[in-house]
Amino acid sequence: MTATPGPSRPGPAKLEVRDVTKSFGAVAAVQGVSFPLYAGEAHALVGENGAGKSTIVKMLAGVHRPDTGTLAVDGAEVEFAGPADAKAAGIAVIYQEPTLFPDLSVAENIAMGNQPLTRLRQIDRKAMHANAARLFTRLGVHIDPDRPARGLSIADQQLVEIAKALSSEARVLIMDEPTAALSGVEVDRLFAVTRALRDEGAAIMFISHRFEEITALCQRVTIMRDGRHVCTEPVADLSVDDMIRRMVGRDLSALFPKQDTEIGETVLEVEGLGREGVFRDVSFTVRAGEIVALAGLVGAGRSEVMQAVFGVDRYDTGSVRFLGKPLKAGSPRAAMAAGMALVPEDRRQQGLVMDLSIERNVTLPRSRALARLGLLFGAAERREATSWTSQLQTKLGRLSDPVGTLSGGNQQKVVLAKWLATDPKLLIVDEPTRGIDVGTKAEVHRLMSSLAARGLAVVMVSSELPEVLGMADRIIVLREGHVAARLTRAEATEENVMYAAMGQQVTT
Image 1 (tube, one colour):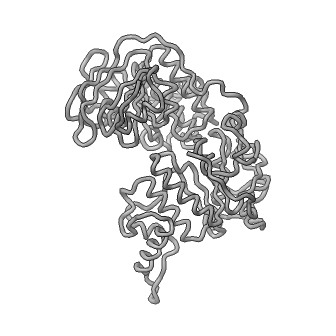
Image 2: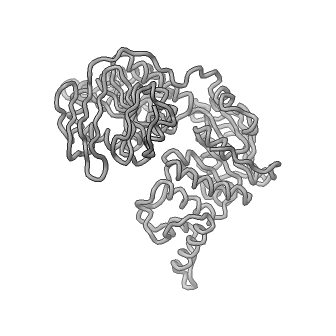
């Protein structure tokens, strides 16, 4: 992606954050933060997980009220009693995970809370459809207003959210990690729409951990660290190294701290694995002390292969051997008992029970082993959870707090702690650093490398090429469900991985 120039001079400040603070109990989430959002400009908000970005977003969305300080729209101070007030002030938030009603139509979702009525005070469905169609035409996308929201891709769901914001005449659009689950083509389409809105005079606040997206879309960046404002500067004046240094307060000498390891015996053997319509004839091995990456474009079948290996999904052909023995198909229990662990891509839906405590989430896979006479005592859970959250340097309040109160990076650490506590021989990590900040990424990479150095076999599924190239000993590139290339660390380059992923000849 290349940087997109914005206006040579910003327009008036559409929205201002003025010296706001917000605490939750003894935790100061935001401390004296100020910055403006200008009309006709895209403004990045960046920082490590736990830096206070989400709290800022929730204050702007009317979910939280500042303890001190003020918000201003068009120069006038405002107080939001709730999200409806923020919406009425022209502020719309598009979250990483869209919040559509799946059983309603696209048009009904767009009109929710603002449905057009006939003279008889009934919902005017014809006008609702026409309004949705008009919005999609303005956005330059083709989505049927009458289709149910269920089944839409994440990218199309986010476009529906943007249409919803436009229908309410929002002039401030806050986009919180909107590209985390999108392919490159979908990101390009979303950015084209966002640039058009920016050029029409909307103020865009864009939150992302991907620096190439920030430089491609944004003209100004505000950096936060530990709840405080570090700087607000033009993106063109800062290098990526500058931004990282200011985010984490230190130089990151190695984002990918790969250790040299002694490769041991074969731990996993996958032979001719196939599932009709999903993947076919997939074969590879993983040895102790080795990190093997499964790379490829979105939809190539990487996650599906590893879910089949772990027993979450079925497979029709082929076999899986673990530590030299056949592994029962379709049985996660058998995989866990044999010594496998799976850290899924969607940590919120598949990796954690969000309403349970941190300590209960860490100990869930070992609850039977920790029980005495069939009873699970809190002290045993606490000891286990304390040990692992300390080893992973997890930032938390109390172990008894719901895991949903943690930042995304610390939730990922809890998922890792949960599975490492089972003392696995093979760790499968699916998108291990999705949606987490650069500092926490370095910690996760360091942990994976140290685990491999201790003899653990690691399979990593990742969409981030720098992560694949920086961490993997070998790379298996999948394309449309089959193995397109096998590359050693020495052979692997961004060009070779992408050539294979797109069906082109790899040059070595």
